Structures are given as structure tokens and as C-alpha cells.
Length: 98
Image 1 (cartoon, rainbow, N blue to C red):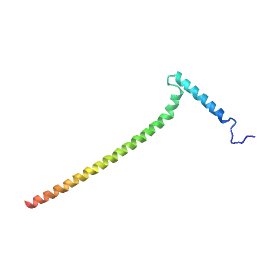
Image 2 (spheres, helix red, strand yellow):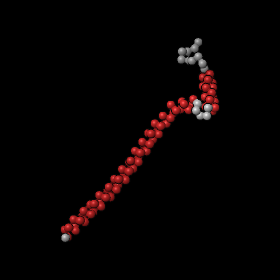
Image 3 (cartoon, rainbow, N blue to C red):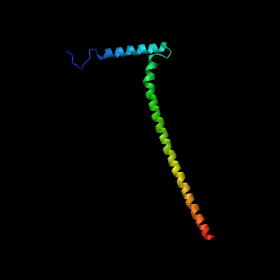
Image 4 (cartoon, rainbow, N blue to C red):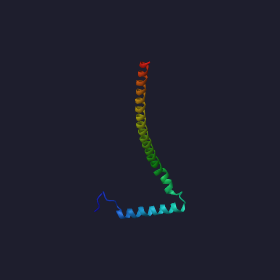
């Protein structure tokens, strides 16, 4: 007697059926010069997912570049601020000597 959780086909039959379907689809793809059902299916499933992942990757890369630019700007700002302080001190001293 079969349990309710078991299907009527065994696993090896499902594997054979799926394999045959894959071979048929590959054959159709081969003879239609790439315009067959696999390209159609990929156009609606894989390509949008790939574009989404690519978008996220570009966003993360841009974000990383922005942080590097921010660090460079902070260092340049510190150098300029120290130069301004130095020149202000020199200017004040020269005015006092005058």
C-alpha cells in the first residue's frame, strides 16, 4: 500500500522525463539557430534577473567609489585648512609688524 506522500511515478521516471524534455528543447534550439523556446524562456526569466543583479553591482561599485572620493576630499580639505591657518597666522604677524 502506498503512502499519500509518495507520487505514482518513481524518481527515476521523473528524471528520465525531464531529461527527454531537455534533450528535445536542446534539439529545437539547435535547429532554429538560437531563436527557439530556450531563448524565449531566457528572455523572460533569466535576462531580467541578470539585469537586476548587474544594476545592484553597479550601484554598490558607485557607492564604494563615492566613499573613496569622500575620503580624498576630506584629506584635501584638511590640507587646505592647515594652509589657511598658516597663512592667517602669517598675515596677522605681518600686520602687527607693519
